[in-house]
Image 1 (cartoon, rainbow, N blue to C red):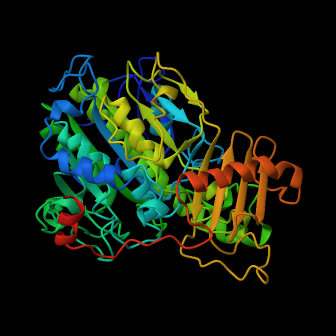
Image 2: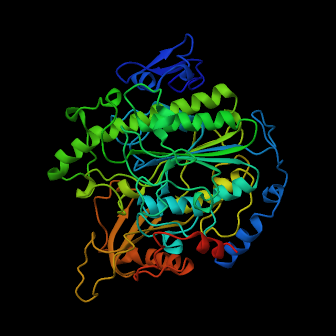
Image 3: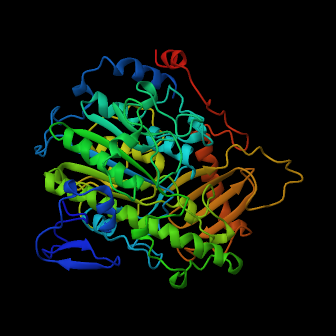
Length: 535
């Protein structure tokens, strides 16, 4: 298998691979070396609503798999599945990758040829936003189709309550083989933390990974039985790089499961800190960095330092995405596998004088979302439908022909992607952050754009942000005319009225307690509590 994304590019019959210095060059000869024959080091060096939940949980263990299928879909699958049978699912999540940092994005310099090609062969959703742009909260939103203020997953290092229904459970009960690889971050405080078999894996039958942590160049995590993942990499040469091992594990799972429909969730840790890419990808230089115009002068030095490593991590993951797509093509699975790529949140990297995540600014809130399924999702689509992380669960289920359990707050937006389906109308998305911040004294609280819990409404044109109180507008941006969010219109009351009304309606519809702190999930739930919640 070619270590870069092999196959035709833009229909020109050429194959692509990385050259030594990270540029792309055409190769019209034979494909690159077989990845299976390479060590990891050699690969890297080649650049390469409570009742509804209880009812569903009670019934799901007794329901035949076929009952979970949408009408007209078969109940069996193979590597060469007929068109009327269920697609496989490869769901890939990166940690802290912002929308703009791609070759097809607005950040200059960063090289992501494999992701760029993925957008050419599928759909790029240009307006996807994190429901709550922090790791644990938004990973829970992705898995449940519900806001963190609904599930209680309002901060890092707590456990997803056992009553919550997750989409892997539905895939499993419909006959899919389900597997998870990588960082989880929904099983409480343990670090790295073995996620044991059973309900805590939320429908994943097998699991190779860990609860939390970012250790990219040393062995970290556990195999399915709780043994060290290092044992699986004992024959690998240095330098060790965690995403390469994780990609290998995902490919190995797909090889084992090619005779039945599978759902594989691959969760990479980068480009989250530490910003230390493998040496092979540590090619970006501070002197060539071009910053976004919203990085204040006094933050430019730190922003440049961060982005040099951040872009290297992004490019390293582009290489791994190429390996995944090469495997799917060469195995014959690509035509019937739904490939989804997204991130839990973005990275501010000095924009607006801020860093990392958890904020409503675009660099934190706006996330990549790419979906590919030949024959169902037209190639080269640029989709401008507003999309929230909580929309992923119902959209995945619908695209794969599975029934929504009726618990999702998110909406099925598959019509925005699938050929022949009516396109949905989405007026706005509702996002939230810093939910654990108690509301300040209203009389004394400053009109501070950085203080307190926040809620945001994003429409086709505007972004409205309130802090600490639903009436305290701290930010208002015209995204059409001000994409870098540099001109705050918060004092223009004439524009606020309709947006504030819609934001409040979202809060009411989803039982948001804002500005009060929502009930928080526990750090640990016992098996007895889980059994009671699912009885």
